[in-house]
Image (cartoon, rainbow, N blue to C red; front, top):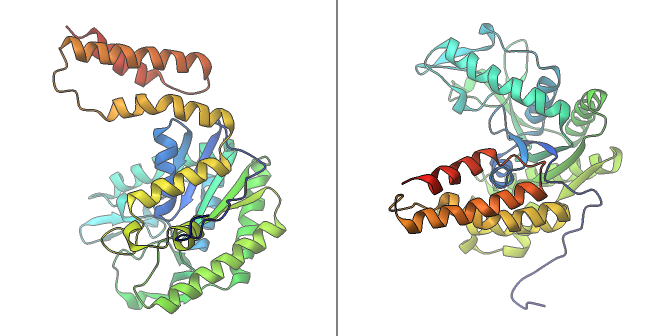
Length: 331
């Protein structure tokens, strides 16, 4: 036992994530951190096809839209500050023209629709229980206000009951078309301190109770304690970014290692460990690509990739193999 830390056991999930399974990840920026690590390790994952989402109602709305696959139309967008935007999407989808915005929004919607119909896992990260609603007749929840005038929206806390009801309905729609999908909930360790610390605590508490209620009521739902690992295990500002709100890379790496232990299949772990030197090589900048050493380096990685492809045919490594074939063959 470490006398200077509170290290707790992360429950092992009875259903494990395999390297060849299809995964969809939705939610706050923490979902992108985990999704990026899964993607770079060649998992078949689609990450936030509507952009970063924070509140459970907006995330559930995205699930429904991805299930239906109904494309967005011109009247779903608006122009603000020189760009066309959607209240259902993150600002990364903003484009100078309406046509460009619709194109990128519907292209990612189509990819998310295909993913959610085939997914064996849906990873969901709740960020905050505070949500913004339109003040017009629709009264709809919005995913992003895009710095529009505040009088157009009403901000309020979601109740546990409405979060649970909304998610039960969304998961019922999802499982009507994909009955085998498992859902893994996480709570973002990012603290929302724009208003005050007490509000952040109240928000996280509501989200925790909502998740616990869903775990008890909906089969094949699981929980990974990312929030608890950062707040109770690491529990030190050296594990935070300079803004003292977002976890630092070292914290994300640690949470990723705990996630792997709790949720990845043994074969997936074997692949990740075998792929690790290749991944480092892909990030390595070769100074002299035409040198004998560079070609030997590429040939060594190529041999590892070929061996991995032989043992893990379900993993797409074609582009990686082509990269090292090209480097190894350069005169």
